[in-house]
Image (cartoon, helix red, strand yellow):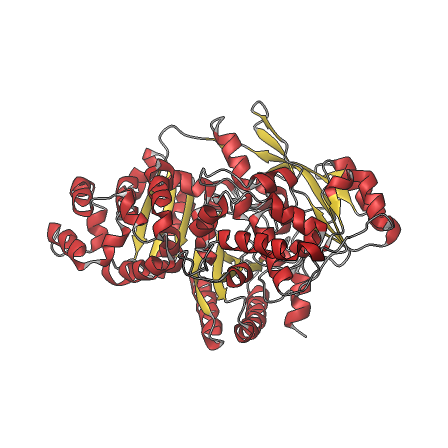
Length: 620
């Protein structure tokens, strides 16, 4: 078979496995490649590429024995190559090399298989009586794939058992079992949280089997089970002419909603948190089923200074549907300063212009658009230095929204120009292209020229957009795949990209991302500037890569949701130490501003129950 370098792989199987981001994108058919058939059939994460990465790493390092289940998991992989395309598109990793290495390991060690006997395990037998033996496991090959995540504030925690309920009644019985045996448990969505904390030493409850979707157009809602991912839901309602306020594509709606709240650029019009939830069903720790809408139910979305806890496991959500408009389009509004950006966001919030709006920093913008990390670094420089674009507000609206922004005197880069730029990214690095653009309108900035509607055809002529240009910056064996992907209209359609958010999953391509999410007062821009500067100062102090993420206006421009990102090499012990120190100081900084300004609220005070465990590590 040859070694990794001979087949064009940059990293060894061991390196690739250790750098899995756990973003769970290999569990979603987000670019039309299809889905890992083994994972879709068996549901345990161990059967997906993400799980096989963890399994191979654990076997290679001798942390678990080779069991019959491990052999089954390896044998069930058909080496179709779907995961290589999916993972490279998001993270730049090539998991197929790991899939081959896992099979090789099993073949070389079949005579040393450890027989894992479950017949005498009383807890397992009780769980099997609830879900069936197929949907629970105490095998190390399964449990190890639920034991870790890239967050620096978590430690490997191998559960005793993993169970996958298929109904609300089964969840209820599992909760009663936990009460009888005094078992700790963690509820897991897709395991894609960048902050992790979905581990338990006793039981992990994986909700991924509960995938029902029921669209009720008359009542303007969709009922969905706890196992439905954002991409799956958005795709289902889109076929009926609707959209929902969605999370990252691989995030399960119910889990994301109840752990951190769902926000996106559409929060500008659709709001966040409880504003999109009509009702929800829960099972509490005693196995009792209750509805969020009942009079005696707890306030799920309450703000608590000490950090909120979830009173039960969410099994179903009734979620708002929003009709699509026939003339929807995306457009971009560039700015050279953050002060101007914040002023614009506040104004369109007050005037209620557009459906979606959010300002992006250079790291986000270049990383989202570029199919390789190397190109992203170069494009970030081009946007800053050559185009003069420090911040870019992306908007979704109808023809009247786009015209309103133009009439307000702001430069607007249309969907047509955006598509041309995306399909010409590699050429933007060359001065020849920039010189052609500058010659068209002497004395104007690049972004002012790009915003001129009259010369859009000339911009296309100068750029000569072509999907094959993007395929030229990826490995040789993936060129055809990238050319095909970027030939589809979706990958250059701002509306589709905002709805499904697949490009935003690239934010952790170079390193794992630690996202700081804070609600801030948009009517006090100086407070946002201070917090932004503090994020940067602290990260720089501890030599942690960092950058502005995004700001989306809320509540008619009164406030906004702000994300700032730190980046971590999850396999570098020294960098993890520096990151923990930076996180500690950053947490204290946010606390200070929260006490000083009521409108500054850290997301941990709303729904993020895992932060309590993070603080135990940060402050000890």
